[in-house]
Amino acid sequence: MKEEVLKQRVQQKILLLSFLILVGKFVAYWLTDSVGILTDALESIVNVAAGAMSLYALYWSARPKDKSHPFGHGKVELLSASVEGIMISMAGLMIIYEGIKRLFFPVEVQRLDIGIIIVALSGLLNYAMGWYSIRTGKRYSSVALVAGGKHLQSDTYSTIGLVAGLLLLHFTHIMWIDSALALLFGCIIIFTGISILRCLLYTSILRKTTANLLDKADEVLLQQLAETLNEKRGPEWIDIHNTKVIKYGSFLYMDCDLTIPWYYTIEEGHKSGDRLKAALEERIADRIQLTVHLDPCNIFDRSRCDCCPLECKYRKEAFKQLETISFTSFVRLEKED
Image (cartoon, rainbow, N blue to C red; front, side):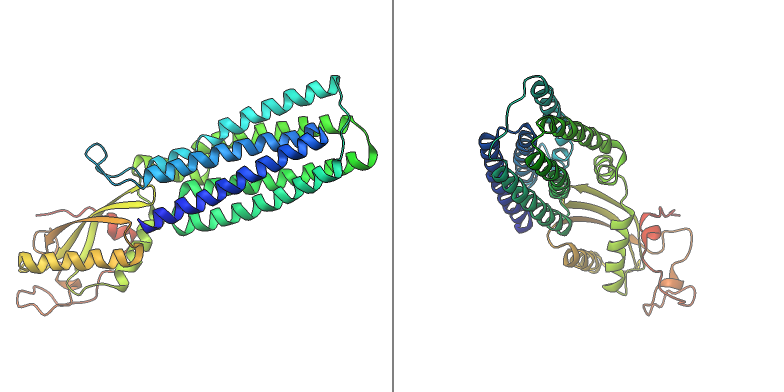
């Protein structure tokens, strides 16, 4: 739970800075009356709204499991990454409307130098916040923080273009440049929003989201877990198979079959399962709930003696080598006699 609190605190800081940037941009718009700066201010509204949504999702996903949600509330975090596209597209439409209106009813911009400075500083802050959000999100497996961070960093690139256009307006005093900037960046913002919506189906972050929602096996994750178990392997772990992993936000619910010597007592088998759980918790801290089904080694259609290193008076064939735990062996479905 400490990780969940940390993620919430990171998002709280990002939300607070996003709100201060929003205020600064509207101050810049009020000082300059530039519709180009208004485009950046309206997009900041989206940032604040999306940040608040991400914070709510992180708070909700950290709630413990209950009767109605036996696997917890972690998957709600995934939904916050899918709403920003609609909000961004709406902001783009508002910007285009304002830009067209200014083409027919132009307004002279004022104190543009101050506005440029404010917009440029806000762009730098957005990029820094985005980097911090992405780094924290990757460290603690938070889709909401990673998606929010990439959104903030993408704003910086549009801000660079906006600042360049405002500088051109400042030195040339060609008034239609302000409306042209609004129309250009309004279209870019709409395209960004549509792209995010398309990402719900096609891009890497949301393919991962879809896989989470469908409980699809995550090959990279399972391979990492397999490597951990190979390092911490108990001699009585003959193999691990029929593994299933359900991912709820940053929490993992894992079910697997552990093959152990058939003559082990219930107590010995229970201790083997505890050692398996401890090895995984050392890697993933308190973000995993493990269910282990113990299989005796003599129930399968082929002997396991060749991959069991234990001294055993019931051995049917000589030990050759341990079977390496891998993604392939993890998900293998063993046939019983």
